Image 1: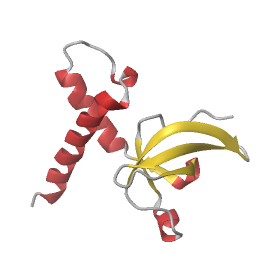
Image 2: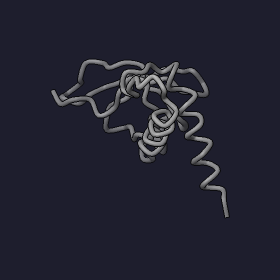
Image 3: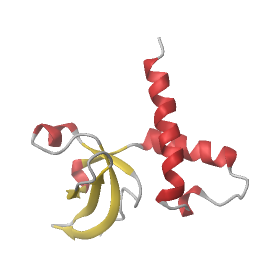
Length: 111
């Protein structure tokens, strides 16, 4: 079995071809790893807006790496405790991810 592409707590979205075939739009959070099906990793994901959970194959998902990377850099710049981002749970990560999303949205809407 290959290692997981996404980690628990990571914000992901369904790839566009999947959305066109009925997968929900919007951000989802990886809640847990599931056993592979036909050699492909699977995840339990939860919609950040709706709270609905569903199973997703790894090939159906795309990551929000830009948001994750920015959130991590914001966290590390303000982190006086020097606790690594990778060891923080989603409760600690959530405000940093929100700040990163707002910052990226502001950049995209700037003329």
